[in-house]
Image (cartoon, rainbow, N blue to C red):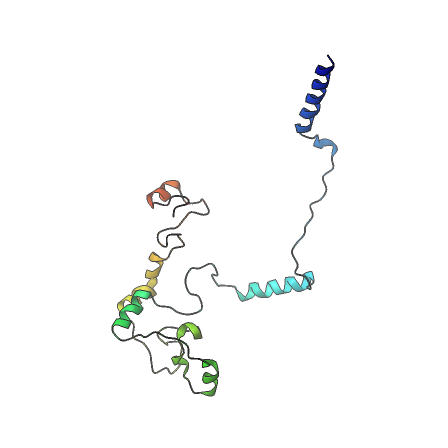
Length: 181
């Protein structure tokens, strides 16, 4: 009898521990609104910095794939130009900044990826070394690169549907298997 009372008591207290609390008697407190502010800055200073950065990035697609600081050409177009002798391997010469300032080096002689320009030197005013466009350059410039551009783990195709918004049948049609694309 004694053991059955102890068992009944233990079961009742255990069940009560897993029962939902009665929220009618509790008052809800207002939500706490906290935000991140770097150490050494006031909230106003940090807000001002964030606004400056937001204004600086207006109109920029920072999530885009591919180069953003210069006008590029496709690898295929570069290889074709290289085989025809129209392109070379370009490396910025040591001390090119100082040489540019001193006038010993022309801006068009600095590789376009370094100067943030265009591969055909169209960004350099008065450049004598304007490079000719090939058929593959024109296809690439018209957006042909977007067909091959992908964030897929395998390097091609539509990529993994990270958001889950693409219909399942479309994923299966594209052979996009979760975890294997």
